[in-house]
Length: 239
Image (cartoon, rainbow, N blue to C red):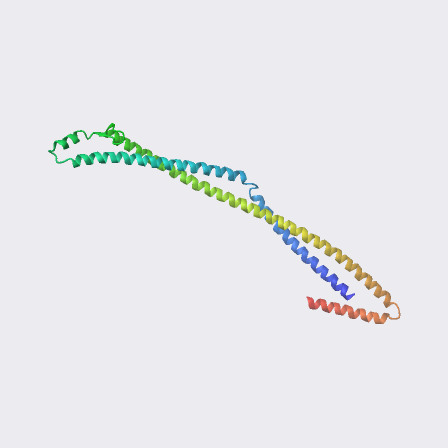
């Protein structure tokens, strides 16, 4: 009887512990579910859209860089053409030198050393100014695209972090649900075991009561009292 009562008490304690664990898990499940509801369910399409925008901006940035490089080359070529003409006139001789006078007279018209055509100096200078203005516009446009790229990349990073958090939160919620189900099954088994032990204790107590009624009743009563005291002592020591 004492052993059965001890088993019954342990079953009750385990059942109480499982109940507390289930309650804590249910509170956590509610909090995780609330967080999951705050997160977007799917970011796949949004990620694809932003990635497409990034690819387009990168292409535009690359094309602008190539155009800027070509413009710089043309500007340098025309500047070199002017510098060569100025250098030729300077190197020709003094102010009274007939060759110098001839070069100075024709300084307003230059000959392209690549194609051989004659071009007015003012036209070359105007072309250089126009090319430099165009280059500045392209540089500003490329800077804007670079800023847009940084913004899109940051957006993509935020979306990917949100997607990762959603997946982790959903996995945690599924884990909590599985743990609650497992502990609930354990609790049901403990309840069944507790009922079995309680019935067994009642049967043993009835058997003892019947034995107490016979000629050995007095001895059995003392044994029962001793068993109860020993059980109470063990329980007190356990607490």
